[in-house]
Image (cartoon, rainbow, N blue to C red):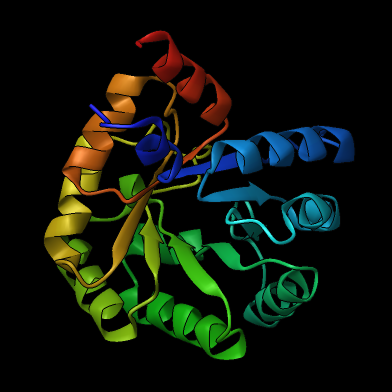
Length: 223
């Protein structure tokens, strides 16, 4: 288990992506995440200004989703959205890659998309969301090779919306194909301390969860 509360918090992207979430909820989450020392707060683009006000001059970074949750946007649209998110204060971009390309195992298309988005927002930390539960078995190794060529900061296991909860096996398999060259963010259904621990032990260095506050409260109850 995590040695200290701070160790757990440092792995957490406190996430609020519900379509009906408003600024008041975002402000509350950002304030709690800042106090807890979470790695980041991840919100939808229109909620960035509200979160940015709370996180300014803190160690908790601000992340924005791009084309969440379906990835259904043209590449120019994603480029604009990424640049706009950075303008609004995002340090990190959680980008849903084209899910048709994922299903077909078209790694060349995914690599082009990732490369162009990295090039147009070089100041950002990029977390590319691959719905790995949909990725054909034959494409895993090629995906790992593409990620090692591009070197984004993170590859993310999924949206947590389209293909169910993340599994330890998915994280282990991503770690196997990427080596130590690309960090892994796990997301989807992370709501217990045991689950968080197992994903971290499997190789995830970020955990995206809407239950960040609950996980830290659960840790406190252990003491």
